[in-house]
Length: 255
Image 1 (tube, rainbow, N blue to C red):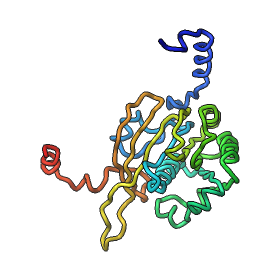
Image 2: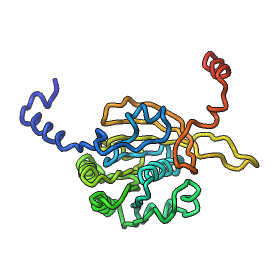
Image 3: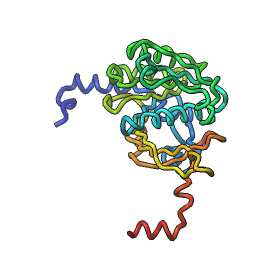
Image 4: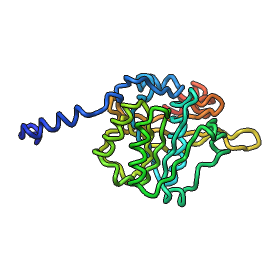
C-alpha cells in the first residue's frame, strides 16, 4: 500500500509540493535545440528553456567531457548573443583549473561571452546560483557544484522556480556521488567517445556519449553518441557512424 494514500494529510502535502514544480519543464518557454534532428525529435524539440538540467560525468575521468557538454548547451541557449555565467568554487578552481579562453574559442564559444564567478564554497555557490537565476539579463548559467551535498530536493526546487520565473536556463554540473532526488527537468550522464583524427593526426571533433537518465516530461531514458561542430555550434551524427556504409552496418549487427 502506498504510504501517502494511507495518510490523507501526507497525501495532501505531497500534492501541494508537486504543485510547486515549475511549468518550465513542459517547455512553455520554448526549447533549446541540439541541432541534430533525430535527437531533437526524441525530446519534443530539445531541452526546456527556463529550467534546470543536471549533467554528471560517467566517471571521474569524464568530468571535462561533462563540463564541455554543459558549456555546449549553454552556448546553444545563448546563441542570440546573451551572456553565460559560470559559477564555480575556489576548491574546484584549485583542483580543475579555470576555463581557458583559447579552449572556449576552439569550442566556438566567444571567451567574452562567458562570465566567471568564483565563490568560497558549495553553500556560497548555491546562494549565487539562486541570485543568478533571478536575473533575466542572462541567457544561461553553468553551475559547477561538484559533490553538491547541499543541493537536495528542496534546494533544487528553489533553483528550478527561480529559473522558471526569469527564463534563465541552468546547467548544473554535479558528481555522480551526489545523485539524489531533484527538481531538475532532465539529468544527463556524459562520457568521452572516440573521434576520427583530422589530417596530420590532429585531434578530431569533440565526440560525446550521452545518456538521458531522467526526464520530467516523461521521455524514456536513452543513449546516443554525438559530435560537436564548433563552426555552427551544434551537434551532429558522429563521423565514425557517417563513414559506415549500410551493408557493413548490417553485417556488424548480425555478428
